[in-house]
Amino acid sequence: YVPGDLTEYLEKTYNAIETASGIRFEDGPYYRTISVVCYAKAVSEEGKGYVPSAYQNRVILYPPDILENGNYAIIHELSHVLNYFYHKASQPWESTLIAEGFAEYNTYKTIQWIEKNDLALAYAVGTSN
Image 1 (spheres, rainbow, N blue to C red):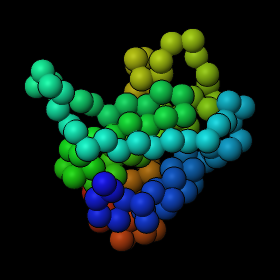
Image 2 (cartoon, rainbow, N blue to C red):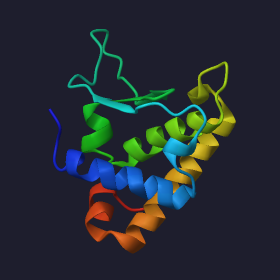
Image 3 (cartoon, rainbow, N blue to C red):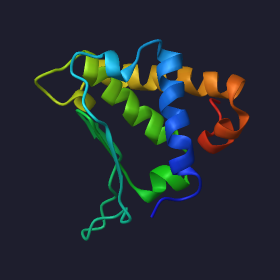
């Protein structure tokens, strides 16, 4: 299940991330195909909520990430992937302060760019405030 216009906006989001960051996914020395997976179940059998994640070239999202946050979670997790393509590390990027800082800053810059250049995508993503 892919809610709303996620498929339509994913390519635009991808391009906006590259434009706002000034770097391209494909130019990274560790580039591979990117996989974005959206699972239908948001809570484990133990009642624990799943969280969005990115590792190497894979982004995993759950319904609350998409339905409550627009594409914010997608931009944030794709920013982790972009970082990984340029700065491969021996440990998962999402566990480091620098990686989270890059992802948050790049998400903010991307959303600001989207708000100025693509109003339909800005509506889908949400505001930077």
